[in-house]
Image 1 (cartoon, rainbow, N blue to C red):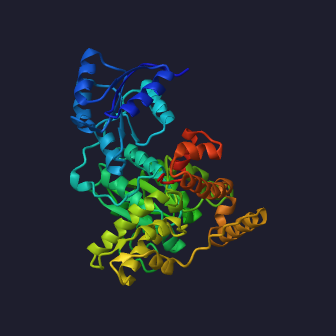
Image 2 (tube, rainbow, N blue to C red):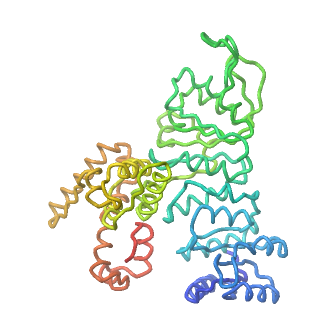
Image 3 (cartoon, rainbow, N blue to C red):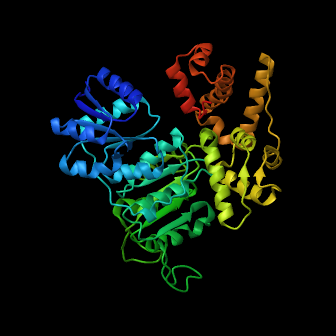
Length: 472
């Protein structure tokens, strides 16, 4: 049975206070609701709660700024931060000042009640090392629910040396996540060294990783430091770890177990003072089942898993990313360009098989090739090719559209046909336009659209978030 306790909620939005209060009371908690920092201090003077839930932007100050002082006065008090400023910086800052958890707005009430239950059960989680403002200019962009979960995981791992395994399709930004973990952590003053396992000949991987002594093999005319030595004190990023040969996997496992390695041809053990972050676009669990990847190494690497969503699974981030890439192109000397609303809509509709990398390359191309300052939908269509958008009106037409979609997946992403996600992905592709069409039919009125669909309003709101549909 979950533990209950007293919860102080600070938010200047009366509607949010009412909904949160109702949900927490339903879970059995004793709830106090206040609207400002001044009211919060008064409530704390009257009696310390078991958990504090606070918004960031309040009428008389910033909720994050007061957390560190509050914890100094009330050590061990779990603080859960709510924020509409849902960026990686906010997530890390919340952890930095000692918050127990961070939930981006709009948040799920179940997630909040679970966070409160966890705070009551585990207590304060501790703070991370301070981060300077100059270190906050990070390239990770996105406000979708999927990216918020990525931010929360990053915020929780930056202060420690736990091994992180980043999974995601090519072009989703795995190295950006690895660099963010390094740049925000205590090793940020030391090197960040990356090595791509798929780009190195099999016979050279061990020498690249661990270095070699003079005369260790033909052509080794002098001692050479490997990536482990080059990254000493910092982070070693093992990209495309799924392509690592089995013999090199065995040696890497030994290093992770013992914390030491020897160079190729050497005998003196060297301490491996690095944080390991690995990444893959392959299904390592399947490789393990097929005998192509060591199971014990998989578990050593998969201490903290981070799964990056494909861009088509976070479509609401496309406009933000596209404008960011256009700005960056202009800063690099390319013509300054802007996107028309129709161009933005065309970008959001695209499936992005190349993910964020494809979007960035497209924006640079459009910055050069577009004749006008404002990029039109026709410019986008010319570069992407006219997408096929069948509008079947019969069962046969729907079946034909599904067969065409399956053929495209088999052609472009054959590994996705058997990864266990096909049903959910195809249903989402049908559900997204259906919900969007019903919202448009009812002028954006979510209550009427929900009734027409035969679902309740809360379910519709959750589907809007999950499917990254902007309610207009």
